[in-house]
Length: 155
Ligand SMILES: [Zn+2]
Ligand SMILES: [Zn+2]
Image 1 (tube, rainbow, N blue to C red):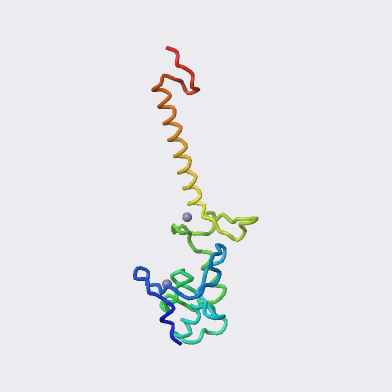
Image 2 (cartoon, protein in one colour):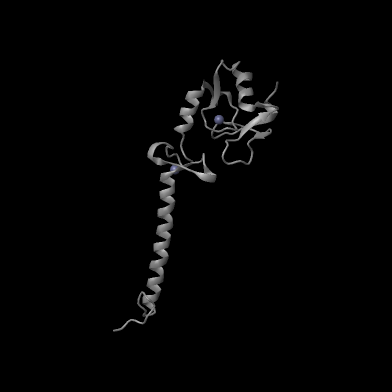
């Protein structure tokens, strides 16, 4: 088996990015993985470079990039450990997704894990923008000699 035509090394992260078919492509809820036939690409890479996956263990990405097949980034761990790692994962800005910082989603977005820090950052940015717009409006009204209700100022 030759995996070389199927990946391209990424110099910054050291990840070997999978170029072949992708499982869960285009879905947001499920992490995408490379696949070859019915087997997952990173599992194939692990078996190819490191040997058989020990009984009962799962192959996990240390780099957290599901499309990476660099054997140095792959580790065989137990299912329980895999779950633990997934639960203590971080958001795209590196905030820990657990405990109070985690907003579990319900309804249509069930299963999604939102970062509270990012959510609050976003909210305060929107609030800042809103306040700035309001300040700017009042400033212009003052310049035109109007009060905050748009009425001419007396005196
Ligand atoms: Zn990697
Ligand atoms: Zn975050």
